Length: 125
Figure 1 (cartoon, rainbow, N blue to C red):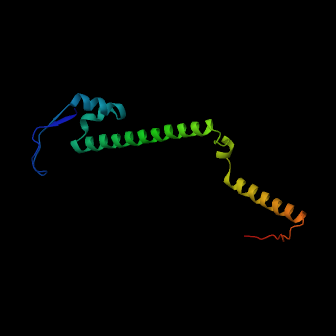
Figure 2: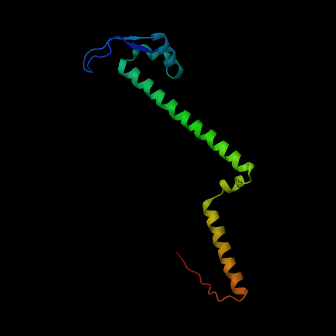
Figure 3: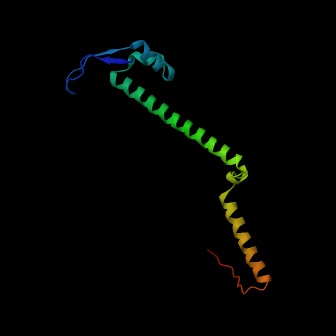
């Protein structure tokens, strides 16, 4: 345990006595920070740095979990044939829009060619 409070139950503004496990704190500090700066830290800077490290680790764990979940979801989709080719996921949205527009124009030209009463006009946005 990193620290053990000796006097739980005191009011928040009263001085508290804490026993720190300095060896364990130093090992944790040395994983991410310069070991030479450990003993230059105050209680507040040490606490803030280690809380920041914990927040970063929590965020990384959530990101890794999301990546694992998405991998499993893609694997499941691929196994039942619902996964699109990778090129569709990585395609350029602007190119897709132009392709869809060209397909729509070709569709209406085919309708007109088959005798449907379709009027085709060009508009500029």
